[in-house]
Length: 399
Image (cartoon, rainbow, N blue to C red; front, side, top):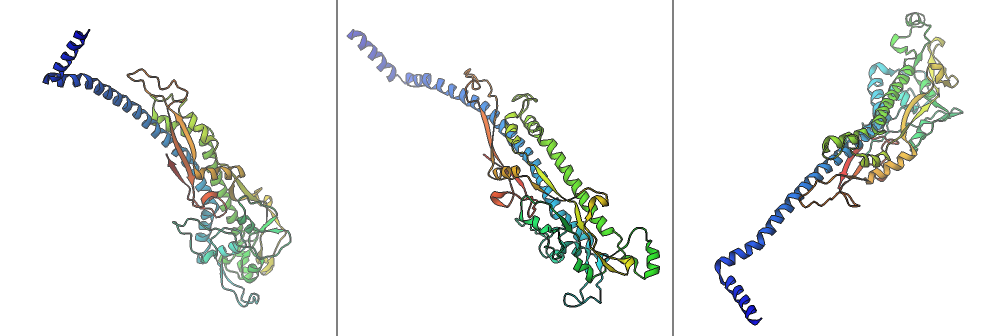
């Protein structure tokens, strides 16, 4: 036994002492390790490539879905404030729409200056505008928040409501009758109105009033027309948004186009992530008025002030008149959560590998993750729809 051990040790010693053996023995041990490392690197690269492609698909799908929400909310905010303000200011403040003062008017501390039609509507609270109305600076594009307010109506008419009350609530209510022009301003100026059955030429000949001073019902008609158009824009934007998000088709198609058939079948792509965002569909509601006060001077009555009983809009051909839109109570809760970001997970199939280890068979399957946020500049409330509508929602993605 001792002889065998001695011979074994002798052989080992001779082999280690041999210079050729010093190269061959480590090579025999290292080469398999190197080959194994190469295979592992190759298989890891395959898995990483599949994960990166799926991660890009998930990021693109989440961004596409929330961009649809961002576009809708920004459009709604624009319809609520900046859009009507720009229309009325650009159309109703030129020289053609300046109303001459009544030189015999003694109220308010002397003869008033000419007023634009914009001021008539703004002072009555009929349109939103930056504080200061016609003379206010337009909201700066880079401002964090655009301030749009309804002027507090100073007329005191029993049963009248004020549009300014809407500015203090995220869920405004339209109750009562709303003024479109102030009686006091009508007293001090000449906003003439005549009925359609009196021809302008005949009226001018009989009463000596300039044609440009005879407004007809154009003010009221144009005001209603503008808000009917704004309602149409709002409703169409809402319809497009709902058609996109109700089936999460945009998310699933975006995921499929970037992931491809190697990751999922077209009909099944992106269902997990889409299900998460399905819980964050934004819902808005419109605010409508049904009765108005409209003060004017009756040109046929030698300029007498006319304040009729509240006018039902149904008598003017419309059942109600759109004024603004706001987020529903449930959506205000969702939009606050979206400010912090919502976690979206989406599994993907791992490719086969050289070692025949099935990575898809475990309880926890390979998945990607993204935290998607929809944010505006109002911080945690994240409500830039109303009040102070500001079209500045943007999508942000986090790992």
